[in-house]
Length: 376
Image (cartoon, rainbow, N blue to C red; front, side, top):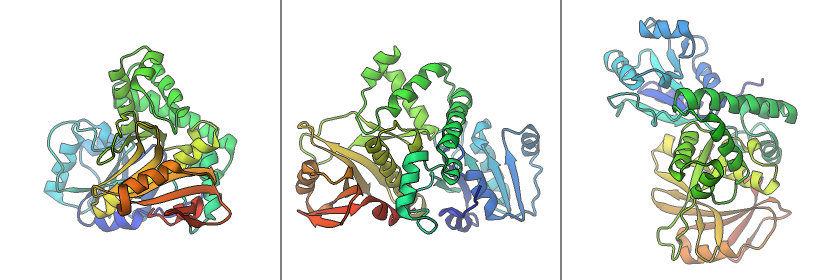
């Protein structure tokens, strides 16, 4: 596999001199490769799935003269936050300390004390058009993400057959290992069915009640399962924005997958999912590197006017974004941008567009070029 520097590397390396770094993200998104690339000549690496490594950790027997100690999947260890807090409080960050995990590290408080003030948190996402703009043409990156997904292995190999084989193993490992071991979910088959139902619903609102009837469980159980899948970085939930929007009463969320290649084989759904991933990645980047408070929403009112996405930064609406594979009229985008006024910028992202233009207050943009200009 081609090895390339990830955008977050320099930010993480600078912060390691001052705090513990918690690096989370989906399985096989490149966390270990990034971590080992920070100090390749003098780092200690320990994986909690390895019995010999766990023994060294229990004895705190790693070298103190190395530049970096990497604890991979440490969240699987009971009371891991208390343990790493104790190391930091007694030894500081010499050697530097980096903790990685394939689950949201803030969601698994396995005992006790807080790490407040002792760490910086980063989230590593799959490749985006912006992250690869210096290596590949933006249009080619977007097409590849829509075909095989943005995870490093299938993306860099570029083979649809390889991507399908990789994806089956990837999903199976998360469902069979992480859901059972970390989330203590036992009804794995029903969760697999839920994931299949959700991948066919990308771009549409979902109903917990309807999914519950299909799965013959309670809506509360469905909601809990979706939360677990979100914590394990399989999918993410986009909720409706309602503040100051008249009659925006719809409560159902939308679901998107970190792996765009896993979405149903529909060009519109995959394009929308790819844009959702790029927007969320940018917002997480702003939160993790600049301390901003960010959110991704969509808009829909009782008249069923809908806009795919709204980005919010520090509680202020920023962009209204509608996605189309080809040029189309967007009355909902015009309506909501008129309602919200100048505080928000309306953008129509079109995958196949001959010429960019400014139409009735709306910026009509070539999707690949616009996505390439985002923070990565």
